[in-house]
Length: 443
Image (tube, rainbow, N blue to C red):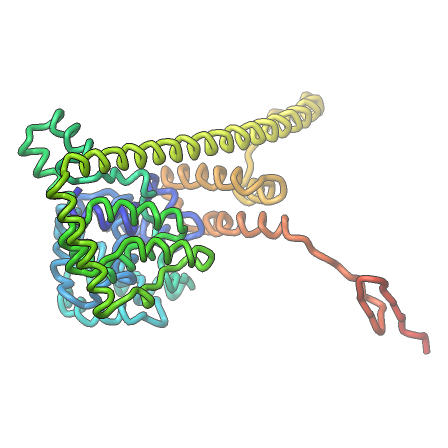
């Protein structure tokens, strides 16, 4: 896993189905229709799903950049070209990204720094007119873009993270599958990627990385992994104490944020690290075998805990899935029986008439979904619609706008409402105890 692959897993891993990009997102439906005409005209190599995933990654990357405005040519343009294996595809991605920013009213410091350095690099490119046309259409249609783009990182347990020390159990297992030189290159590349992402394991870079995760559990998991792969010399040179960070995460778990301002500094902090470093080096020299055994046992415990946690999560998800599927099955069965009963009744009446074609409009089906379906069933209906809309090139239009209103209508349906009739009231006093209506006296 190189640095490019790692940063994408941390910031935006992307969707596996293009229909997921269309939910409540009319601008993405418009981009899709534009892509169908741009692909043959400009010889775009990648499919629309990869292009849209790359657009979202670049939007998140720009707003979370730790080095705003620095070396944007290599870190953004060249990296995107290598990822898509095409210069034209990369320029199309940034044309769509620029169209997004053409709709934003206010830019953050990171975004301002990026565009100040980036605009001259793509000035007068072949997709400049595409950007202008997109902005004009989006403004005319009243499309809105979010002020902050949502991070969608790969769950830490699914990131294929491994300890990289040469004496770790994973390393020796890897040597059994690969030649020793290949195993070394694999692990060196993996460690180099984390060094790039964390600026050689500096506290500020680790703070930025941990803040990408919303829960304390995720932060603790990734912090434990960083500690397991961080070389001792970086810990010493950067005055990095993982126990201090871990304690801070525990103390501030309710706030769900990480602050490094109270980490000890100065001579006392240096002495603490120097003493710990010297003691560690002495123990390593005197009893390396014991140290390796302890690390092996610690890794085994860590792997066992991760396995149990993973199995528990999978069991919980499986139970939830089965429960929801059973509820949906019963609901659909009841609906089918209800529909069957209605059809049987209608059949008796229609035997005296000529056969007529039966069809439902999108509006009729959506109203039924709003009234009777729960949110999960409604999402499945929306996915079904977009799959057929893609097949018949009907992604944009009034029907797609109707889809956008389904989920809000279901949320509104479950929201408690209180109605007070004051049609003929001169004065209404409402309290938990009683209600007084004083009607207007006749004149």
